[in-house]
Amino acid sequence: MRHYYGADAIRHAEAPLLASLPDGALMRRAAFGLAGVITAELRSRTGGVAGRHVCAVVGSGDNGGDALWAATFLRRRGVSASAVVLNPERVHRGSLAAFTRSGGQLVQSVPPTTDLVVDGVVGISASGPLRPDAEAVFAAVDDAGIPVVSVDLPSGVDVHTGAADGPHVRAALTVTFGGRKPVHALGECGRVVLVDIGLDLPDGDLVSLEAADVAARWPVPGPHDDKYTQGVTGVLAGSSTYPGAAILCTGAAVAATSGMVRYAGTADAEVVSHWPEVIATSSAEDAGRVQAWVVGPGIGTDDAGEGALRFALGTDLPVVVDADALTVLSSHPDMLHGRTAPTVLTPHAGEFARLAGHPPGDDRVTATRALADRFGATVLLKGNVTVVAEPGSGPVYLNPAGQSWAATAGSGDVLSGVIGSLLAAGLPGGEAAAMAAFVHARAAGLSAESPGPRPAPTSASGILAHIRSSIANLQ
Image (cartoon, rainbow, N blue to C red; front, top):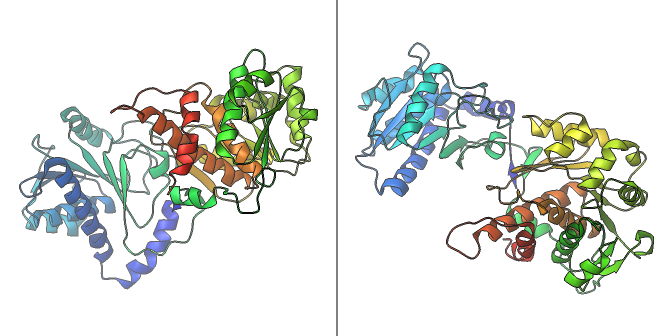
């Protein structure tokens, strides 16, 4: 599991080391790790290190010092190095002196022969876009196509939200120290490498699951399990207008569980023709034993859709509320009053705005937390980085997809079916939603990559077809 830390937590963890080490030792430790990562990057891009050229773009904070010390260490490995110092009056003096003693050259602009640029303009305490002098430097770097390695975070990108509201650095690689920061999941940082500098950090409340975490938690039937004890997922989805939503949602629940799936709705014939293992009926009241409900995809927002949602939320079972049911809920939030069973809301940005009365904005973590507290429900905010928050002070899960192949019609119907199957198996709402988002993103990536040598557009049906293999290959 990956944990993400704000600037205050990092500074607090650094304090004992700064007090116990000689002056500047922690900076040199970080810079030595940075130089090692840059060395590996040079080798992978150019095939060698000696004779290559690196240019550091240096601001006034410690990140500028990190960049200059890293360039100094690279000089000892035969790398030619230069530096653009944006504010000579506030540059880190010790690192600048070491850099010039090593033979590093101070320049006014990045040389066109540069192999890599090191972004050491601002650190994790900064905010706002690049200032005009830095903007001009990196505009020229972009035009020249020179790859950038950022120190801690791409300058101009917000460390807490990952938002970039103006000119900012576009990094191919970001090297950070001690612990990951929210920007490394929420923002565009390129590849992220974490360098251990000896910080003692506690577990944070902002986390993301890795494959091994999901594999360890995914329900596996034991020797005494049967189809009922593994969880029975009920699906209230689809209509005569949108039967495909029922097929996708129900099929995803089938793919994600070894227990049983029951479908209730007007698309019962279509569902069974696609998934003969599903127990289907036209009435929720006649569905039989169910351990969690998924309600919303394609049901419409008329009286029938409202009735389906009232039925599901009126039970004492876990419920996933998705798609049309979210629109209904935005007009009738009282449906959740007094509900104690787990409830998972799965809005995209537009549905979030209907529920909250405003769009999520740049700070998607805070917005998701607030909506979870307001409704007393787990909220999964869809996006390239999915954010999952439970009411109260529990962890917030981030799931960076790494690609946007899941941004296709019907994809959310598949996701809700997977979440429902995990709730039926007894997993808590936040964990079920985060695990489902992880597998769903993996399935989207696999679908886009199969079977040719390059990714190609996929569909919700394609994503559904890769749910089982995404689960099977977790490790």
